Length: 586
Image (cartoon, rainbow, N blue to C red; front, side, top):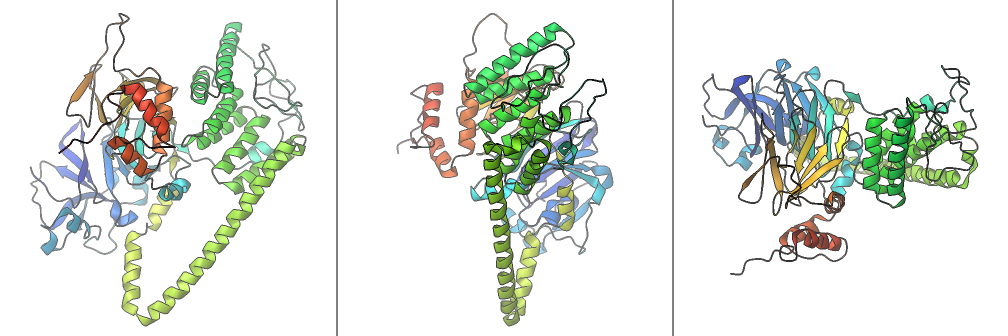
């Protein structure tokens, strides 16, 4: 079978294990096609096997970058596009439709064909009913898109994959991190209603123990059980240090040891290590509020992409476990302010003033409240200026249109072709949040970089990186387990063997590498990168650097200033002879 129906480059093909006669394709023309090998296929100017046409709802700039079929529920199809949203379609609710090229253009170049796609034969035809799809996105990204565009960074799903049990969906987001979504127990986006936490708890808990009053605060551990206090950074002098109820002294000792190591890493400004230790502690002790609160503090200090939103989620978790946890309230307000969600930050500060009136009198609180109010007024001025600018533009457009009706008509058509539909806005508004986030790799150079599940039950996450590394994370703790040198330039593809412990990888090098377990004889793996934290830090700097500087760095140039340290790290990792790649002479 040969097919040239797509009007853009085909990025991915997908198959279903228990549906051997069908396959699907995603292309940069914004179309997902469904092929049935039992039905004869002949390419023409009318393609009648269009399953999903993203152009219809996203406009002419839509591109389908990746697709995946759920291995246990083949009716579920995941699609990644050139935006931060991952779409999960139910094929049972979708009837294939058509896309039409003008006959004289049907044999043109892909770029010429692309300009004619997206217009159904019947005007207004849409084969996607409202309930056929669920959207998933990291909660902080929709409002961050404009900021990313200003820095010439694009957000694109370069790969999507289902877990072996079909309950989770993994997305490698170009320009950001890797996100894991639970499609069975979908997590709703956070809603900033501080009424849940603005009132003090009842004067007596369900167990009859006395709890703190309205004017007191806690450090995230309830006051009963074995006496193990939780150490916090910058705790006000009037804050109490309550304790947690442990099931056994051994559990308390284990917690104390882990907490001490994490706090020491925090004090040394080793925030990535501190986050890893807090994450391990949360896995072992999921009901201790101070672990979430301290990890939020480490996220705030580290400030990688998505860290402030992750800190917000931790603050919410801590506040639900302990509504009188003062530091969680204040850190929540700090993160909202960092994300420019100033109205929500002001609401949070109002709740803190009501719940902790003593703390509201401190200079720290008053100074921060002033900063938030200034930012709030600044946003109001910007909104007012944008409204006035839109009014002037509309007036100018109306005057121009009165002189040229045809020009107005063509402009309105062009605008409509680029605008997203109302249904798309509704789908995005109801998007679900992520379950876990994996950081450390860099995905900015290529749009085919994969991330996959690895292990007998998908207990690890693997992904390639622009620095030529293979990153392996623990799926539960999200901590980096190992980093391997997979390519001299970039690792794009990583595919696990379906039945044995074997991983195939490839990148820019003209080789495919197979990775398998070795005997535990004490020998060292030459391709293992010992300092995974330094590698992760360098990748985050690379991801936020200027695109031109990154291009020059990949060509072998030393960039003074912001990227100088990255060149040094590459030299230390690869050796002086491989750190700089010179152009071949003619």
